[in-house]
Each structure stands twice: as structure tokens, then as C-alpha cells.
Length: 278
Ligand code: PAF
Image 1 (spheres, rainbow, N blue to C red):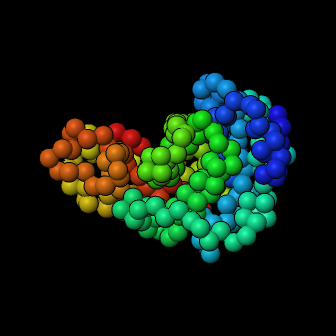
Image 2: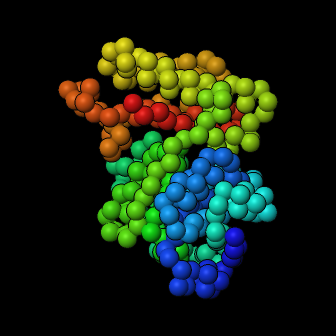
Image 3: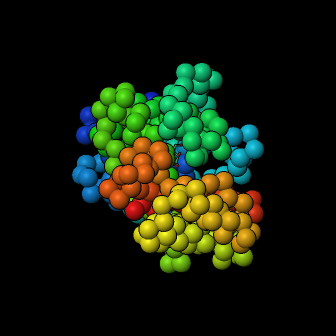
């Protein structure tokens, strides 16, 4: 596996080779990322990954500075999963000058849910993903469903800018107790880790209520948030949305429309997100 840090090295490594399947990451990798690498591998051709903690997508009070960085460990894991090329630029390389050209995703998709609680987050994500796609020129790019809204926002960007890349979605990997794997799980104390699967349990409970015929979403969402609050969480949202565009399901079409239930909540200092498709 080759590891390159500069755009010049990256271009040299890509020259003459078939276009790769690409997995963008911010490092601090876990089995969920490695499953995305394997999905990229199954797609045939070389596999490339990037490791870059993207300052643009962090708010001023978020965890940019304490986001764990361990390039050696991440590269070992990537190599074990079958990655061929790692692009790990530093900030001066990727943002050699202030990134004043940005990609602004539409507010109706990117200003809701995560976007409502993390202003500018999806602008930061789209801008770096657009830039990484230009740098790597991949045939396929792989995103996890764990960041469901991110996947939708990126799909929209790829479609509307007619980017010549296919977006593949990898399923969320979970620990045995149901907790979705996430780089931020490492922030949890032992007691928080024991409580953390309750976020997924809350999503399952919302699914159970929908399956049992509940149709008052505001009520279902409110009860789910209250359940989390009573257990010591600070929920940002629990939301029943249609999968196609993350908007509110239309009352009459409820049983036909594929739905997804999404949630974000803080446990202590750690903010976790999760979702479950129906
Ligand atoms: O999902 C992530 O890890 C990041 O948002 C991404 C896609 C690598 C962009 O920085």
C-alpha cells in the first residue's frame, strides 16, 4: 500500500492506473470504515482512501482539536482491509490558501436535522468531498449509511454537478449491543458506553410504534426524545422522515413510502447520531 501526502505525489501515484474506488475518511478508523474499504474492493479495481480531519466541517465549539489522529494505526488497518493507496494530506497541502470557494448544498436538505444543529457542517463536507473527488478522480466513492444525511447530501451534489463518479452506500456496522460504530464512541466513559446502545434502542422503539400503527409523528418523536431525556441524554432530534429526500412523510402515502428514523443526542460531552431504515 502506498501512502502519499502531497497532491504531486498523489497525481504521480494515480497516473496511468485505473481510476480507483475511493473511501474518504477523517481517520481514527474502526470496523465500519474497513467494511467500506471492503465494499470498495468488491467493486473491482484499485482502492484508495483519504485521511484528513477537515476543519471546514467543524463548528467553533466542536471537537476538531481533540479529534484523535493516529496515521500509523489507520494505515495498518487500511492495508489489512485491502486498500492500495492512502492520501493523507496535511492542512497546508489541501487548504494551501483559505478555501473561499465552497459548495453550498440546498437548505431544504442540508439545513435540517444535522444541518440545523451544526450550521455550516454540510458546506464543509461538500467542499472537501468535491475537492477530494477532483484530486482522486475515482470511478466509485463509498459513504456509510451511518451518516445518512451526509450520504443524501453528497448524492445530490454528485447528481447536480454531474460528477463522473458512482456513489455507493455501505451499511452501518453495530457492536453486539446495538451501538452503531463511530469514531466518537471512543470519547465515551465506561458508564456512558454502557448507556450508549439506548440510542439505537430508541430508534427500534420508534419503528415498533410505527409498525403498530402510530401515525402521529410529532407524538412518537416527542416520546422518543423524552425517553432519552429521562435516561440522562440531551437529544437534538428524533425524526421520522421519508428516505428519498428526508422530508416529512405525506400522511396518505405513509405505508408506501420507505422511511428512515434519524436521531442525534448528547451523552455527557459526546454527541452521537444513528438512524434506522424502515
Ligand atoms: O464522514 C466523514 O468521515 C467525513 O465527513 C468525510 C466524508 C470524510 C469528509 O470529511
